[in-house]
Length: 249
Image (cartoon, rainbow, N blue to C red; front, side):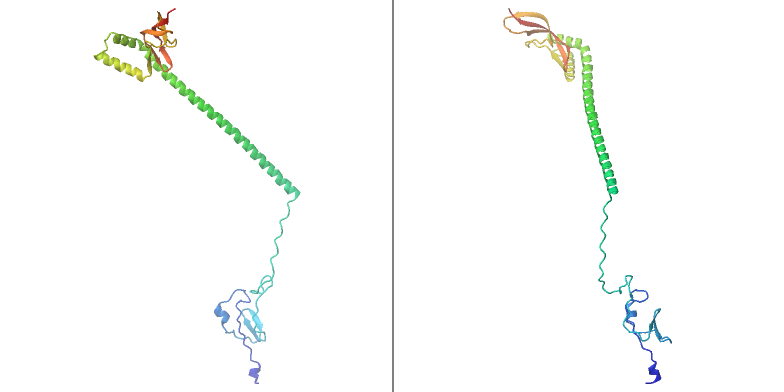
């Protein structure tokens, strides 16, 4: 063996896929490449910034991770079980119970306040309904009173029309047309004529000005209408003046 063969430096093929310095994966082309950097005179091969002895084994060295295990190697270590939560102390439990009692008291107070407000709302609604009904009744009464006052002022004209009708003056002609329209208007206003011959005497709507004994009747009956009466709704404007038959003794 010559001197040249005796000191020939060995060639090392670094096929490690993890960079021993940075711990990052190498590119496939770089990991599979057989090219080696130039040998240094000291007899070491420079792999990045790490010096490897020339007589070192070619087995790739895998750097250890932060837990001391080699990167990529399966780990048999199991994660530590999570520590159970510490039980509350007596002071903390008392504090929580106190807060819960406060919340419950506030809830009860709010429910009581809500119930009181609901009752107040119902009472106000009932008062409003009563007020509205009262106003409607008053309006109807005012309307009826106004109509009654106007009709009452025109009763003499209606009496004249009745007298003219009895004398046959309203059979035809312009006066008959006017009388018909006037009576139609009174009917539209709710004016009702009182007093009809043959009906039973009613003290609420009749005024007896004459009594005629009769053996044919058993109760007081209207014999003749001297002056007609009128009412608007339930309001009697004037009672009818009538002559009545009374039972004979």
